[in-house]
Image 1 (cartoon, each protein chain N blue to C red):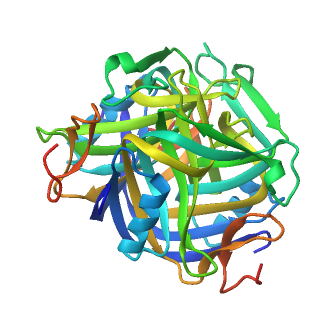
Image 2: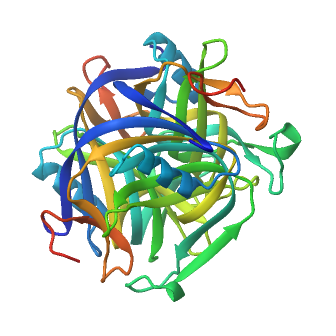
Length: 160
Length: 160
Length: 160
């Protein structure tokens, strides 16, 4: 289909996770995925609070590909309420699990901030629901045009 | 149940989609739904980046019904990180697929903005997970009280 | 697993709900859960608009446990677009259903605000998709360290 690639996937296992205060959100999710042999998964829900949050945004007016001078990196000590975490876990080019996560968090003023998540430490708690998808051939590869790693549906799609 | 309508729905197919740079998010989703004959679906996850984003918000102090003078429309060239897309695809009164989507996006400052999505073009990539629901009789109709189209559970609910 | 508790859960029923204007989001969700005997569930999707929104944020620099002086409570008359509602419904220590919900909403300026939801009234409409999970032994208990109620996986985890 022009401008859109897709794959019908079978739903697999579903997990509820609680990550403890002080732990790295990204490391714990990746280690969990390795432990239970979760190759492809989507974040259905995440709530809690975070500190030491680092994420990036794309500068207004930026062109493709997305390169470091076209991004802005933020580091916030927090703590902040974690309002949502969206994204997926997929194997990269070497078959290793890779998360692509965007974060939405709020200050005590009620203002919301977020972007492409690098990492965060859990503050009081973090409750996550993950849904496994059986998606053989779906991987994350670097997109030359986009400058960023993204989903490739290797069955159907020309190599990036 | 007073003040609440509901229907138990069966879960159907699940899809992972990647929409290419420059494509309209709304058009591609609707065309995809037509191609795979997806009548009822919910957005489980969406991450990526967007440009040429248009959405609306409701003015503070507005009364029902929601009419154009009570809304504020925003157009942003971007690009912006796409933090989330929430909502559903349901048939409208004529049986044609209709999306109700709310968008959450971030500037390079980390500030987050969003509202009721009119449309957006994909910037670097857009990864979406959709879950089909078998929900015979659930449609989107114009609500006379609300001024906006909303879910109607046509089996149980009086006509809007 | 160090720093992370998890449980594989079976997926149960799925529901689509519409809550009417003027109704309390929290009360209607809890009453709905009681009516259909939904013990464990996750919010998959929520869109609509809200008024009389109350939520809290955590103050920057706050330490654990999260106590009232370390929070900031917000009350907004609105209306606001409801961009997302994330979280879950689980039984508390007494076996009664309890929601842990975070809210993301937008002003007509496009600015987004949110935090830990206390309550909100539906403005024009509210469309919610809930997914039941069969998660025997997963409950919400007060965490002494965190100061807040959070998920406890009572099969495996030491009492809080």
